[in-house]
Length: 343
Image (cartoon, rainbow, N blue to C red; front, side, top):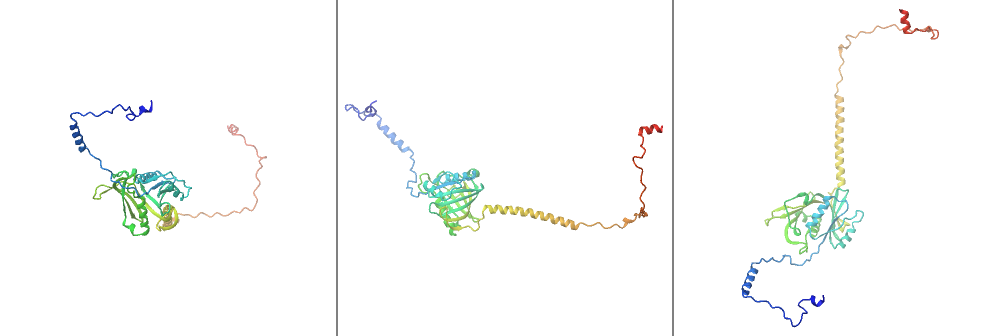
C-alpha cells in the first residue's frame, strides 16, 4: 500500500470536497440537552498537592545478613509507611560500615536506616545522615509488626504523618539532636510524588525508662481521638557519632547495658540461687546431725548377764604323738560291701 493512501484526508484529490455536517430540525433541542447534562456532571477537583517538590529527602532502609523474620517484616512495614524510602539488598557482615555511605550515594539517598543483626538474637539500628553525619546507634527491643499486632487502626498508604515528640526531647541536648534526626528521617516530604495529600496518622516518639518508644496511631476524628495501627518498637540509645557510621563520639549512654552482660547476669543469678539452695541443704544436714540425741545407757542391761566360767589355760609343753601314715593305713571297704558284711 502506498504512503499516500495511508494518510486519510491530508493529500486527497483537490476537486473532492469535505463532507459537511447535516443540520437536523431538532438541532436546538440537542444543544439544550447537552448544556443540561454538562451542568449535572460531577467534576472531580484537582489534587491539593499542586505545589513543587522541593525537599528531596530519601531514606535507604536495608539490613545485614542474619536477620530474622520479625526484622524483615519491620523493615517492610517502615517502607510501607514511608513513601520516600528505598530498599537495597542485604549487606555482608564482613563489609565495613563506611561502605554504606557509597551505597547511599549510588541510590541517591541522604538518610539511612541500617539494621544490624548479631548472634541471631540481638538487633541494632543505625540512623545516619549520609555522608557527613551525624549518626546514632540504637539497640532495638520489643518489636511488634503490623501482621503480628492486628490492630483496628488503618491509614491510607502514602499519606503524610504528623510527628509527635515527648517534651523531654527539648530538655537534653542529645535528645534534641535525635529529635532533628527523627524529623528529617521519618517525615514525608511535602509534594512528594509517591505521597498522598492527606494527613491521617501520627508517629509518636516518647521517652520512658531512658528509652525511646515508637508508636503509630490513626487520627479518627478532628477532636484528636486515636487508634493504634502499628508497628511498635523500643530504641535504646548506645552512642551518637559525629560522622556517618563512625567518627568522634558526641554522646555515650552511661546507663546502657549490652545484651551479653544482661544474659551473663541472668546466668549468674540463676547459679547463685542454686548455690544458695545447696548451702541451705548442707546447713540442714549439720543441724540434724547436731540435734541427733544419743540413746541413754539402760541400767537393767546387766541384770540377766551371767559371767562365763573361766577355764584353766592348758599349755602343751610336749610334742603330739605322730599319727598313722596313710600308706600303712588299712583301706576302708566300699559302702555296699560294708552293708553286705554287716548282714
